[in-house]
Every structure is written in C-alpha cells, then in structure tokens.
Amino acid sequence: MRIDELLARNGDPTFSFEFFPPKTEAGEENLYAALRELQPLEPAYVSVTYGAGGSTREKTIEIVSTIKEKFGLEAMAHFTCVNATTDDLRGALDQLRDAGVENVLALRGDPPAGETRWTKTDGGLEYSRELVELLAAEYPEFAIAGAAFPETHIDAVSPEADLEYLKQKVDAGATFLVTQLFFENRFYFDFVERARAAGITVPIIAGIMPITNVEGIKRMTTLSGCALPAGLEQALDARRENPEAVAELGVSYATLQCADLLAGGCPGIHFYTLNRSPATRAILSALKLWRPWERATGLAVPPEKATA
Image (tube, helix red, strand yellow):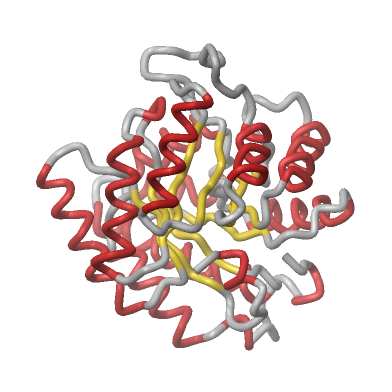
C-alpha cells in the first residue's frame, strides 16, 4: 500500500523502521532476525537505504522485495542519483515496480566512497528534485517521499534556501517527508511551522535515532550537522565505559522525545534502527501502551504547536 494513503487516513500516528543492506551473510541473518523481532509491533512500513555512493542498489531492491513477500510488511526503497545514468535509474525503478514496491524515498545521495564533493554522473541527474520529477512523470504508481532537515542541510547556503528547495521537491511530486535525525524537539516544531508558512502542506514524519553507542552517535552528528544537546552529551560521556548504561539512557531519552513529538501533533516516527531491534522494540512498545498522542496534557509541547 502507498504510504501517503496510510498517512491520509488521519488515524493513529505511523511508526516505521529503517534498515541498511548488510555486507555479509551474518549481517543479513541479523537483519532478518531484527525484522522478525519487530514485526509483532506492526510497523506501518519499513525502509531500506542504499550503501554509500549508491553501492548497494541491487541489494536494496532484493531486501525490499523480501520484506514485502516474506514478512508481509509494506516497504519503501531509498533511491539515489549516485553513479547512475537516467536509463540506469529507470531500469532499477522498473525492477522495484515489477516487485510490487509502491514507495520510494527520492534522494540525491552522498558522494561515492573516497570522494568529498558531489558530482553529477554523465547522463544522470544532479538534484533530488529532478528524481522526484522523473518519478512523478513516469512512475505514477509510486508514493514519493522526500528528505527534510530540521537543522538545515549541511550543504545548504541558508535555512531559507533549504526550505525553498524542499518546497520545489514537494511541488514536483513528493507526497510526504521524513526528517533527518535530531535530538531537540524545538528544531522539529520550528521547522514544521516554517514549512507550513512556506506553503508545504504534506505530512512531515520525524526521524529518530535511539542512541546505543557514544562514539557512533558523535560521528554521525558530526557528519550530518545535527546538534547533540550539551546536557545529553555530558550524560553520555559519563557513561562511556558502560555500554549498557549508554543504551538505557538512549532508550529513555528517545522515548520521552517521541512522546513529546506525538503529543505535539507529529504524524509519525521513523526509527533509524542501525539493523538492531532491542532499543526500538522497547521505545515503540512503551509508546503504544502510553499513547501520548491521546495524552497531550502535561507534556512540554501543546498539541496546537504543530500540525505536522
């Protein structure tokens, strides 16, 4: 089923998981084990990334197809412009369509391994907006998602320019948005408010990463330009030598963060799982029991703050 149709139902918020294609047979077994453990939580959909530089295009298609066929879960394929001509992109999109996949997250993508600057492939596309345009014009069966950046894309010249480009993607055919990870909800609510003022009306799903490793999250926030709050960073550093304590703090923080977002009107949470299930299982189980979207009173952000 198309994810934009799920979001249009205006019922409970959606919950979804993101995985990446493993590089080894053992990694693939771990991925499917995590899927089996998360399946009882009935996610609205599962997404699968490309590897760096678009290096796992075929594997992404294979895994997305398996998720639909063997697990009975709705799936969304990440899709980038990296290292591909327009004809290459059409060929991969044909494969996805023929496999029954109905959802695509359209991305420009990161530079290939070993390169620091983005360069367009000869005969390919330069911007994610162009990929959205291709999908909308030639593959109407796909629901098209776009990426959004509450703290502004690391390559954008300004927050205003970043928001203007985002509106171009939506106007081109993106029907819902998924944000980059963030750890301060004020960034999300402020971003939604600015997006609505700019005329962006599609649902904006919050991307949340439960912290399970200190070095890993610091590396990730540095690469993405996402801020790690000083208090949270200090608490993580104090637990650096105790991985279990780090994971416990990460689960607690993400649970409170998600509860606040949902009480404030966020239409869905997309969990960046890093192919692991325990943290996400704990967070989502608590959220489904507490149902914070029905218990806004007493939480930090009033429900009128944002209609995402």
